[in-house]
Length: 271
Image (tube, rainbow, N blue to C red; front, side, top):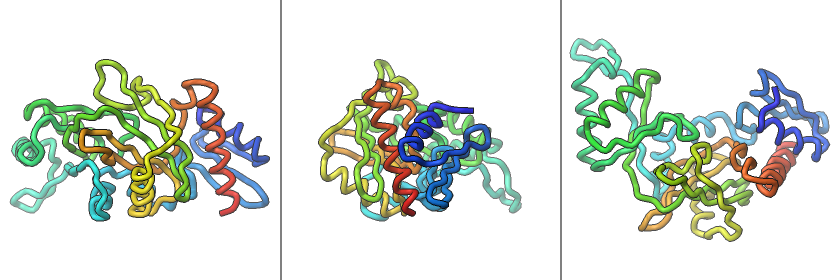
């Protein structure tokens, strides 16, 4: 099945005279050129190794690595779904009311309210919520932990915009500002935010993107920056390159997306 991503990739592959095959209903793409095979799994290109991809996807682990490297980033704190009781037995956190309340009290004391809750490995703003009260925080964490083993909690920061910078081997591929839709506090394109292409990227943000990639071990991906009153701060790191929503904004954006995928395919063929 051809998806929006698959359609963009197919066009890029034809322009690069690269053979493209689809597997698993379009979730896996096999690239063949000059007798060499490369793979794309979901939106993950094999220019990044598996561990680096997982580190980038883990918002809490990524934050700790960024923080250790001295980069200014939004804290993401881990809540796991299992604890040991006094008898040494492991129980699910969402069944332990006192534990959840203690965790919520800890985060509220440390960061204040409101707080943001989200899946540790989530994308696109799905299941991301803002807790205005301690009771809301308890409800949101319990809800997340019913469906997964981990949740992330971060402070809510007032931001005027969010900027995403795509990079490959320390070279900026694309940068755009996300302008959120009226009435929404999130900046996800899939939730209605609109991208505005940035032609001249701030040098400090480029350097911070490069250092973020270095701290996690990425060659390819994107870094999201929140623009707050104290300046840009890293929100998260992405190892996948999904330009579906960006490309849907118009012909110029679609052509840019195709050119970016061509650049990635060129690099893969030289790997």
